[in-house]
Amino acid sequence: MKTAVLRDKKFVIENRPKPLLDEYGEGAIIKITGCGLCGSDIVKIRTGKAKDGDILGHEVVGEIVEINSKTDFEIGDKIAMGHHVPCFNCVYCWNGNFSMCRHFKSTNIIPGGFAQYIYVTEEHLRNTVFRVNIGMSDIEASFLEPLGCCIRAVKRAKIKDNSNNLIMGLGSIGILMGQAVKALGNKAYGCDLIYDRVCLSENFGFDKSFRLQDEQTALEEMKKAVPMGFDNIFLTAGASSALDFALKTARDGATIVVFSSIKDDMKGFYNNDIYYRELNIIGSYSPSPMDLEDSMKLLEERKVKVDGLASVYPLEGINDAINDTLSNKIMKAFIQL
Ligand SMILES: [Zn+2]
Ligand SMILES: [Zn+2]
Image (tube, rainbow, N blue to C red; front, top):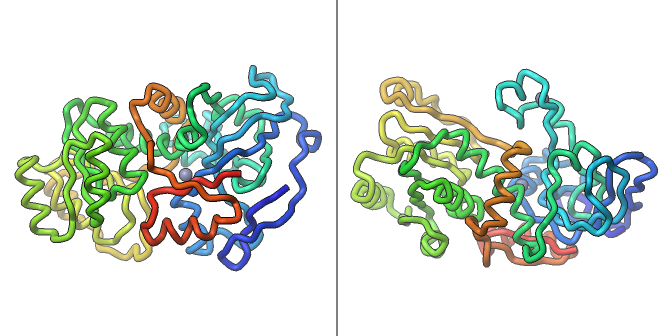
């Protein structure tokens, strides 16, 4: 089968053996129709976390072509899924930190979404695989996992009704985050350096978005819109200055959710801001099965829309997809197989 394999920080198309259900016994073989390119895939390549020979991709959509399972999935079902499954029975799971569960981290799809076929386990089928309704496009369905991540972040912030939320960074994740916040009955404000993205967010229902070109002007405009400061701030953009700025926009007692990695993680510890202003600074990582379920519901009910967010590339164009994402030429790449 055709597979995009990492060689010297670039993908090369190689022919690999198709995974065989017989080798595993239980589970299913999925014929991939498409897979979203995640920011985390790009981070893994650039930081060297992904090694030569690795096959990445986890935001998969496809069709079940072989199955041996006690679930009611059948051959021909169109599915979207999450790639990690928690054990539900460890100190992390008991405390709701499902994405920290060691079993969660050890589970995955085989070999990865940028391939024509993958193997998924019985526990994936039971927990993180979802049937895609007729009428939902492959691209829409591929947002199941990224939207699940956003829903997790919103839940972790424990946002209250009618709260004022600022989404910093209006890439595809920022646009999803704002819509998730709105779907739960809250106000979503956005900010970004790129003017087109500021405008785009308002088309997706953000109450107001601000251009970050000049920090002082942006802060004044934000103060006019939300004089108290924001209740919750979601950092979806990986810049070391983002947390500094977030602290200036937060009301006392606010929650700041860190939802991105940064290259230069050497900033000072904001001891006094956190102490004197009773700020909550929390992280949010990867979705639980329950977050994925909520994500599918929001997509099905079209409470979260993804129209025009993704640009389509063939598997052979995956390196272009990465370059175009990094240069902000596109919001999100969907690799079609
Ligand atoms: Zn992802
Ligand atoms: Zn666990």
